[in-house]
Length: 131
Image 1: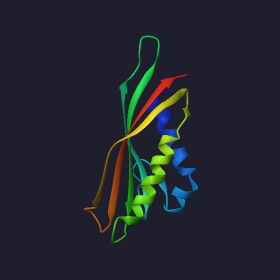
Image 2: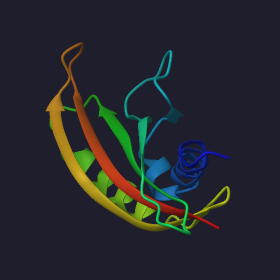
Image 3: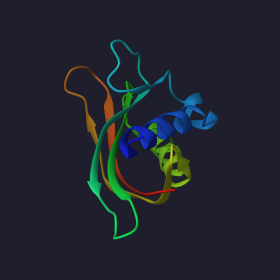
Image 4: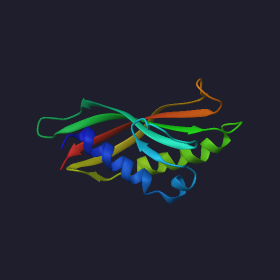
C-alpha cells in the first residue's frame, strides 16, 4: 500500500479514536465533507516526497489537518489543536510503514470567509520507512 494512503488512513482512525478530540468535535472527515456543522475536523491534502536510501524505502509526507469552529473567538481551537498534535506524534505502524518522525511544519488560525467562525489549519511532516 502506498505511504500516502496507509498513513492517511491510520491518521484518520487515530484522530477518530481520540476521545478527548472527538468530545470537542461534531465529526472528523477524510476529505472535505458535503455537509458538516461546526466544530468539525478535516484531514486534507497528503503530499509525498521520496525519503529513502540505498536499501531503505522511505517517504516524507506533508499532511494537512483543518479544524472549524463557529465561536466568537478561536480559544476552543487551541485545545483541539493540542489533541491533534498528540495524536500525530503518537502514530506508529501504518499499513506496512513505520512512522519515524512527525513534526509541525506550520499552522494558521484565521476567520473563515464564507461564514462567521474560525479555521485552524496545521501541516505536519511525517517521515515513514517501509517495514
